[in-house]
Amino acid sequence: MDFSEVFKLSSQLGRFSPDGKYLASCVQYRLVIRDVKTLQILQLYTCLDQIQYLEWSADSMFILCAMYKRGIVQVWSLEQPDWHCKIDEGSAGLVSSCWSPDGRHILNTSEFHLRITLWSLSAKSVSYIKYPKSCQQGISFTNDGRHMALAERRDCKDYISIFVCNDWRLLRHFETDTQDLDGIAWAPNGCVLAVWESCLEYKMLLYSLDGRLLSTYCAYEWSLGIKSATWSPSSQFLAIGSFDEKVRILNHVTWKPIHELVHTATITDAKAVVYKEVERCPGIATDELTFPLPKGKPNSLFSIRSKYEIVNVPVTLRGVKPDSDRANPELGIGMLAFSLDNRYMASKNDNMPYSVWIWNIQKMRLFSVVEHSSAVKSFVWHPVHPRLAICTGNTRVYLWSPTGSVSVQVPVEGMFNVLSMSWHPMGEDTLLLMSKENLCLCYLESEDNEN
Image (cartoon, rainbow, N blue to C red; front, side, top):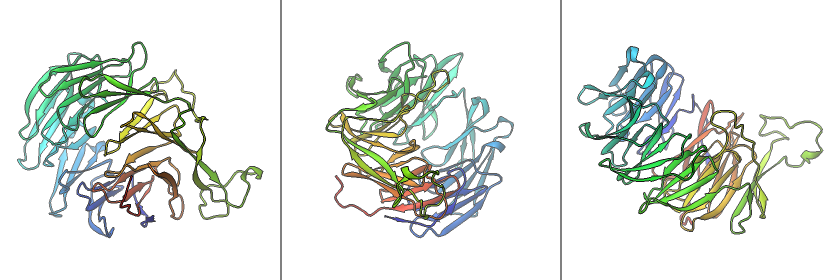
């Protein structure tokens, strides 16, 4: 495993281009485009204010930078460095911005979600979509880029509008059976749209492309409901994480649950492999020290070494007591992700924030649990192999695969607390690591035979 040099970064705004050739990073109001292989600067752009959001177009030819405070979006071209575009939303304000799948239209959402403005870079035209709903996940594009689903709120009711993306005509418009819709997501095959209620009520609705209600699922009543939901890459399964610390897997034939994955505090399954991170200060018995270990000195005598140890079941995982009096309590399944080969699923139970659970989807059972010393910030699957990268906000990156787990210290001067990560999109074994103020690339040794 090898690491690149460290580069400056602001607000964790570092992104690989979809074709994997470029790496974009933001430093205050500057946008830096690098060649991924050499890390040499190819383009340097200066924006009008500090960049708050960054997104590549699907064909990697354009990149947008949003400055929400000023209501401005600037677009830059990699093929024509002298070309640029500025979109000013004026008094309407700006709260979010994204590309359409064709990479030639930009959707800007105004303040208070009064409207979505659709800007065409090719036709130099503008159009508007009224009544977008303010929710967690209100826009969803199909993987083939043909259709867009938009959650709307009109006359105190929830609606879904489905648009054809090539000419933006309205294909379907229908009311949903929800009180307060919280999110929508297309299945990867683009045939089914999942719509779920806010956490105050457990309700999952499944609609066809023509707006027909295919099924309604409710696991229980009178308690906090759905917290997360994700489709499997094959579209065969819909995983629903809820506040009762369970993941329910719906199948694509009957839309009924085929299994419940329970996150218990004590692991008793003898077939599950439990990894526990162990931190040690080499050469010194840390329990004999009468003073706390100093922080920020990775190369000093007191540098902390970390490794995984396999522990025997039964084992009790560390947890936190959720504050039920506060909104969004640390309880339930807050993170879900399928591996790209559809064999595994990773989950995180928010009231056991130190652990990542890996499930065998083929056998619908617990495969492994990885417990850390610090709370897990994020995890992300490799785009080809069943390999999971995990970060906990410290100076290490953690990698899990079916054959084992490893903890790796990021060997840079000073503190590099890894807060977010992303894999190279084309399947190369390159991992982008981002801290609060820096980024670096981690290069893994390729494995020809990955189990």
